[in-house]
Image (cartoon, rainbow, N blue to C red):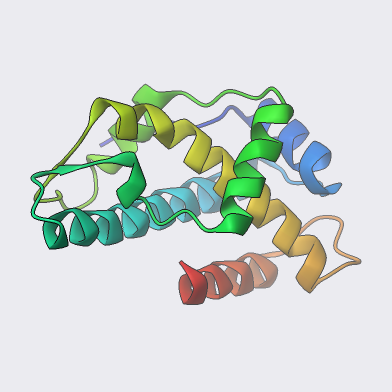
Length: 152
């Protein structure tokens, strides 16, 4: 399967500079896409459990585990006036194990904002954990991915 990038290289580079003053390159784009796909999928698995616990057969927006910090990052993403392609996000999710439940239209339409918020959170986390970072190395990406694995 050919993976569709969620964002082009130049927009990816511009986004990380704007969000946290970090320089990334096309080599980082695969790590970024893999990170987003896995974290979004993890969130949807938790959302599915919430929907099932409430005896619903569809995932609604309120099932998504959006924390206060992620909500703030989603607002920051919106203010950055960036866009992510919903079709590309959904295409990437089809490569992962299928969920038992479907997303409501409202939940599905919210995914670009969730992915945008995760992107802002990731960029900012680099600067929090390693304030001097200019261009994250492989080890730094791996640490961030492990850190988010603990939290999301």
